[in-house]
Structure formats: structure tokens, C-alpha cells
Amino acid sequence: GHGHGRGLRFTPIDPVPASTDALTVPQGWRWTPVIRWGDPLFRHSEEFDPEHQSERSQLGQFGYNCDYLDVIELDGSHGRRAVAVVNHEYTNEGIMFPPTTDPDTLAEQKRIAMAAHGLSVVELRRSGEGRPWEYVRGSHLNRRVHVQTRFTVSGPAAGHRLLRTKDDPVGRTVLGTQNNCSGGTTPWGTVLSGEENFHQYFVAAATPENARYGIPTTVSATGRNWWTVDPRFDARQPGYENEVNRFGWVVEVDPMDPDSTPVKHTALGRFKHESANVRVARDGRVVAYSGDDERFEYVYKFVSEKRMARGSSRAARAHNKTLLASGDLYVARFTGDSPAAEIDGTGTLPSDERFDGRGEWLPLVKNGRSRVPGMDVAEVLVFTRLAADRVGATKMDRPEDVQPNPVTGRVYAALTNNTNRGVGANAPADEANPRVTNREGHVLELTEDRNDPTSTRFSWNLLLVCGTPDGAGTYFGGYEGPVSPISCPDNVAFDSTGALWISTDGQPGTIGYCDALHRVTLEGRDRGKVEQFLAVPREAETCGPVVHDRDGAGTVFVCVQHPGEEGSWADQHSFFPDYAAPGSLSRGRWGGPRPSVVQVHRA
Ligand code: FEO
Ligand code: CA
Ligand code: CA
Ligand code: CA
Image (cartoon, rainbow, N blue to C red):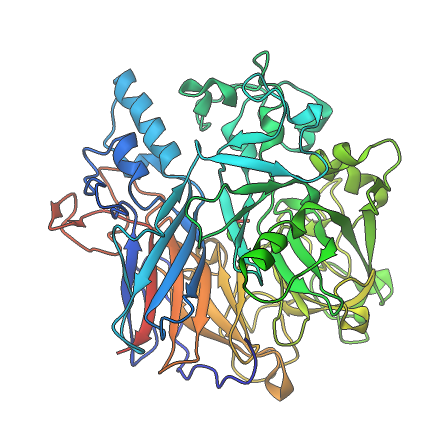
């Protein structure tokens, strides 16, 4: 449980110049990798060898570009065993593989890249509290979920004609998940993972629905072009027109049961899900919040029909794994309380000194019926963006994580940036998205009426309007003391005191610093105080923060995603985390970048 923790003690670090290829942590702390791209997961896995990878070797190894992370301690292990669940969002083939023009080699590299997507589940062990964690090769819990893994489809759109293909004429079984970005661990111990930018793997017919999701309709040389090795990703082909509708969902994986079949939940709608995070209502229904991460997209919530069963019995767990299969789906409308003329697009506070107001959850599906004129329930769930357009939801600045605070119940939405806000015919600034050409992003705090997550009305305010503290149009919760600069908020997490932790994606391109992890105080006179805990290496994004502060001095885990992303095989920009001689491979240490899970602990 959360609450009543003491929190971590650390001295904030200075922001780190963007060219620095180092993981920087506070004085008195150190970092150690937990698991790296290519580390073998199973007893018979092949060892990592970037010059001789194969689809088969990659399927037995930790995947690429880790994003969501949770580290769940196992019951009865006295803090010595845990399971890590990690998303692998995408691949950077230009720095993963030696260049080639041989068609067979290129096809195999494509298959390896596909195999490096998905999720990894891996057991961790340590010898005692305060000792670093190591992953357990060959644990019975270890699992790769990838683009060929079989998923069951749940919810009202399961079996619908829009989900049927020639490989799956009943529309209830999908092979694979991809572009899994962020996620959330449920109160019943499963992990939800968002299929985010699924469009880039497809080519499809030009339809209004495909256009609304940005699905490419022509083959581009720079595209991912998975259809070249798996024809179903060419949704122009007869029989595969609906394959594209089978991605863009929230998926649920049970990390405690490696033989379980993961599920795609249609009741939560189809869009570019950053993640999904659950809060339990007082009456036992569960509420899942989710953002659609693209410019001018929406914030959603799902309210289950059924109530959660307490306890961890096999029966309770089985019941709870059905909670996300039926319920109501809503999209958010935000209304400011200040005159529109006072929102001038610069971030200058209106005369009431707050960007704030009221909001409403607009029903898309309620009590099993569509509330959207002209669309049935399955259409609302498969083409959720079009449904939300019709009910007048508020266009937001790229909703990333939308996550309830387990201590207070308030919900925090990271709105990462939107450089098109107010540009040309695009939506103008409004009180919830108050800056035109919003490069730095902001963080919105949402309080459900009666603090009941099933409420249909809420109030909201902006906690942070990001940037450098002395920059025009930035706001740090009203806090007047020194703060760390912060830009492009992406993932959020909470520690045991209820303080907010925010990781960033994009600071190098805006404020010129390496991406970071920050703690933000929410309560009391220090509300809005931002303190930088770490910086990730050159060209990396900080992902999946997990803060364990209940034992010893505490441990902070992050995923270091896409270090050295702008380099090439011959000119690598990062050597994290092995820092071996460029291009060398010796005793498992490679002279090139490896996206990794790291732990930060007391020296
Ligand atoms: Fe994959 Fe929205 O970040
Ligand atoms: Ca106001
Ligand atoms: Ca993200
Ligand atoms: Ca992002």
C-alpha cells in the first residue's frame, strides 16, 4: 500500500548538457544496469552478439527501447524476489545492425527488429534489502510477448466484422502487440500496456477512418514496412483490410502466469494509447484513465460494470481479469473559468492567477449502448477518435501518462508538447492548453467530484507549465524557491508519500539538456517544487520511473530508451551502459548503445 512513507533524501542534480553520454545521479548515489537490450532471458537463449543477431536469438533476449517498467516484489520473498515487466516500444535499426544491401540480410534484420518489439517479463533477485537487483536467467516467470504472440480479444467489439481477417475469420484472436509505450499495473497484479503509434507499421487503403488514425496509404522508403516480411501489415491486401483495426488497444498481461494468454480490451477504445492506469472506486468498480498521444487528441476514462473482488485467491484474480471487458467509456471536456481574452497564448497567468476550471466526462458508451449518433458500440470502440470528435471533447497538447495518485486520488496528466497549438487553422490556446506553439508541455491536475473516480464531473488546474524557471510563461505551482528546469513531461509515477515523479522526453531539443527524472512536491507550501533526480545519456529519453522508498535508502528504477538514437552503426553517439571500446564486444560488453533498465541506489 501507499501513504505514510518518508520519501527519498537526495540533493537535486544540475541539469546536464545534451551532448553528455552519461547517466548522472545525485551525489552519494550510484547506478547499475538491471537488464540490457540483448541480455539472454532463457536457459537456451543465445548470447548477445550485435554482428550476428537472428530473429531466433532476439526472441530469447531482452528487447529494444524499453519504455514502461514496473518492478513488482513477490509475496513472501522478504524483499528478495521481484518480477519486472517492461515494454519495448520500437527499434532503431540504423544503430542496431551493420549496414547491408543484401536483400536476405535486410529481411532478417526486419524480422529481428520485429522480435525486439513487445514486452519482456523477467524475474529479479537480490541478496537483501539495500543490495542491487540482478535479473534471473531461466526463471520460470521469464517471458517475451512479441509480434507473433497470440492475444484474445475481449469486450463489445470482439468478433465484430471490423476485427475479422482471413487469418482470423471470427475476429477474436490477434497475433502480436507493437509500439507498447507506457502502461500501468492493476490492483489485481496484472500489467496494462498501451499500443501507441501502431500506424507506422502498416500501409492501408485511404478511408476516412484510416486517415483519422494517420495510417500510411502509400509505401514510404523511410517507413517500417513490416509487410515486406509479414503480408498482414499491408492492409490494402484482400483479407487483411481489418488487420490495422486489431492494433491501437490496451493490452493486459499477467506477469505471474507465463502461460496465460494476454488480452486486448476493446471496451477501452482504440486510439494511440500512451498507457492505462487504474483506480478503484469506493463501490468496487474500477476506473482506467488513458491518453491518446498525438497533437490535439483526447483524454479518456473507462468505468467498469463489475466490481473488483478483494483478496488474491485464484477465483478473485480470475474475476478481476474480466473487469476491463465491460463498462462505460468517456472522453474529457475541459472548460476554463477565466475569460477567453485573458488566455493570450503566452502562458501569462489570467487575472485569477490560475489556469483552472471545471470539466465533464462525456459518455461515448454507457450501459452497453452507444451515445454517439450514427455509430454503434463496436464502431465507437474501433473508431474512438471519430466518436470523440462528434461529442465535442477538448483537443489537448499530446496526452501522455494520465495517472491517479494512489495517496490522494487526484489524477495527473502529462501534456508533453504541441508545437502546432494555435498555428494556422489549428485549435487556438485555451485555459487547459494555454500556450501557442507549446514546445515545453504542461502537467494538469484533475480532481473528480467527491473524489469519486466514477463521477462525470471534475475540476482541474495546471500544476506546471514547463520550461526554465526564469522563462516567460512558465509556472511551477506557485512555488517561489529554486526549481529544476523541466520540459516535455512524459511518464509519471508516485512515491510512498504521494509525491509526483516525472520523466521527460525531448528536453535536448527544447531547453538543451539531457532528458531527466524529476520529483515534484504536490502538497503544502512546497507545492510545485521540481527537483531533478537524474539525467539519462545523450539522445535518450527517460521512461518508466519506479520509486521504491520503503526499504533501506530506497531504489529508483528507470528505463533508458533510445540512447544515441541519432548515430549510425559506424558513428555511434552513445556507448551506454557498457562503455566498451567503440564496436568491440568483449565478455558481454558492447561498444555501442543498449537501451536498458537501470537501478539507482545509495553508493
Ligand atoms: Fe511513446 Fe507517447 O510516447
Ligand atoms: Ca482561471
Ligand atoms: Ca511516452
Ligand atoms: Ca513521449
